[in-house]
Image (cartoon, one colour):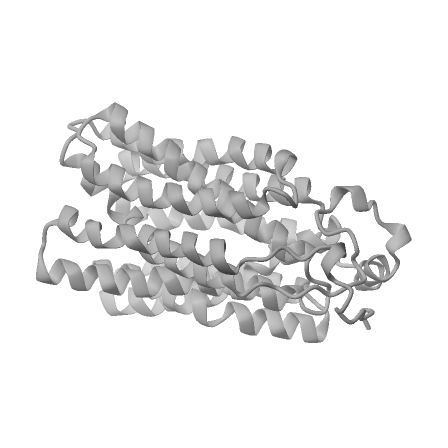
Length: 361
């Protein structure tokens, strides 16, 4: 089961840079987003119609393939709002709000109709999204003009307030994302199982799983208002530290309140490091390379999930005790902390004198 879960991250880390590069090259995000959304609905349809294990593995591969394409929606959104940090945080908040509502709705649906029909619910909810995507207007000439004309932008909304300068992206953010997700993501699919060892109520478990996403919604909104060039590095470091603490917390927790406390911590972990990372990438890139660098971030997340899932599965084959295996995962978010602390440098106007100015062509 753990290996099957890794199929989606496998495809999701292969294709984001490719889609990002192609959308940068063609200067068209919309077609990739529409392609991804339509493909996802076909994947959901076949996952509902066919229950064969081998076919499910293949469909999960295609699910990741199409998801990577649809994820360019965030890149396009960042361009449309001119990399406004608050608007980017609102976008992230809406995503986690969807996770929360979807988790709650899915739980209710399963109680009434059974888990075997869950993909039917997902298909019904996903089909209208295509309609919304069709009405997206991507005016590339206007987007490029805004990036080429600093006077057209309210730079007070930016952390890095010279959009005509292409800043170097610190590769440390990608390695830190990889190691954080290497440890956290394999645990999330089995978190309900871990909680069931100490909790007797499915209602309590469902609440604890869902509250994570609800908390992230409000945290994302808050981070968008308080993040600055002075604290962006601290947000990343603190987020990764909380990831390590949360893993340890899942090991030692034995009641509802302890699980709730560490669910709060892990929600802060995600909100802090992911908001800081996406805002940093968005405001340090231009329309000609934003898709590629956003793709690298997604690749880092999903490759960490994939290889972490394989590693965790290997540990479980040696020792089937979940808790013993989880101890090995605590070290990896701390590696992320070390990488950001030593290698991450915020590039701003004061240290960009030697960076070549390059207009978006």
